[in-house]
Amino acid sequence: MSAIIDVLARTELFSTLKPNALRALCEGGRTINLPDNGHLFEVGEMANAYYLMTSGVMRLYRPGLDGEDKVFQVVAEGDLVAETAMFSEPCIYPLSAEAESASTLIRLPRPGLLGLVRVQPDFALRLLGEMSHRLYQAVNRLDQLTVTNAGQRVAMYLLELTEWRPGHWVVLPVSAKVLARQLNVTPETLSRLLTRFRQSGLISGRGRRWMILDPTELCRAANLPLPDAQCHCAGSQFFRCCNFSHRSCS
Image 1 (tube, one colour):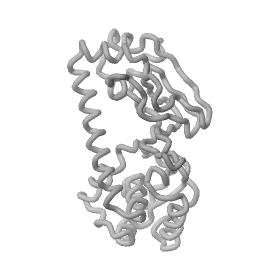
Image 2 (image 1 turned 30 degrees about the horizontal axis):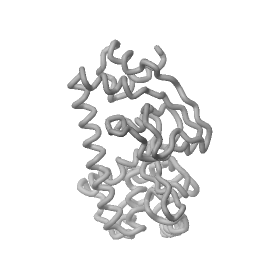
Image 3 (image 1 turned 30 degrees about the vertical axis):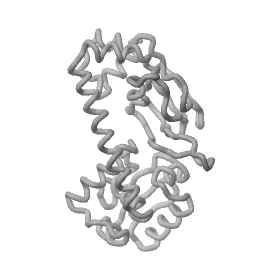
Image 4 (image 1 turned 90 degrees about the vertical axis):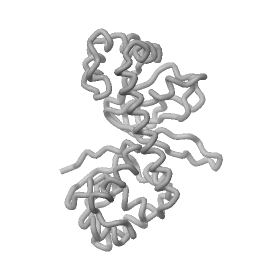
């Protein structure tokens, strides 16, 4: 258990908890390793635990009526999975979770979290603040997905991922197929837009490795506001809820 406690103590949400509280939270916790495409849980299953990602990438999705999975979120190292589901009754998972790459997670039982929020009001408020922030981001993202076109969504994603810095290499955290579903475009449309932006000299790269060459001209090409402070804020509000990694590849 000591190794799990050490990991939680380095996680922002739990970093202010005292050792006794961390031990209570980790009671019954264990490490889980999933292979590529391994399932963590399925939508509708009883939710007896939530998870902390320590490595890898996972996608949270729900099967669509058309047979296509609808990807709602992509999570990576440091992200919590299904913690909000712990407070619902009946307590079931609203989404399915599948490893996009080989992943390691810490499984944390539900009773420890419920017990902690009952006796630690400061922690409970902090957790509620995180949930509220994520809800606002999800609302903003829904708004953007319904009012912007495919080119704008792809451009906004790239600008946010590269933090609006020209010459900043990044690696897409998920496959093009999963990313297309996340941005509500077809894989063919995503490929066509990336090719168009690259041929126009606005971006460079291929596969999962990309660089923004000219943020201002990319905004103009996608008919977006120019990358001033206000636009940067809008981009952050759009994609933070996706939990896409901002790790660069230099």
